[in-house]
Amino acid sequence: MMKKKEKYNLFIPGASCPHCHGKILFIYNIPILGWLYLKGKSRCCNNKINLRYPIVETLTAIITVFYYD
Image (tube, rainbow, N blue to C red; front, top):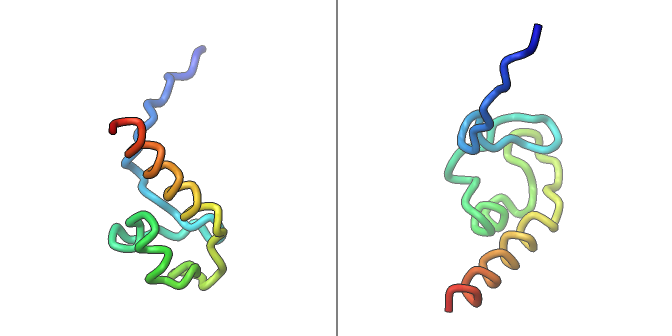
């Protein structure tokens, strides 16, 4: 019997903490601003959020701007 292939949904279940897997509220999930507001720490478990997340978000924004310019 074959398993039914699950659909991948980018929006559900939503963002989660990489440490405790707690849900990240929408307001804290805003790229770069959320990381700065929380001072690089997770709101749910207070663990440090890796610096690579805001770096990747910044580089993606820069590449997108130059690509569409």
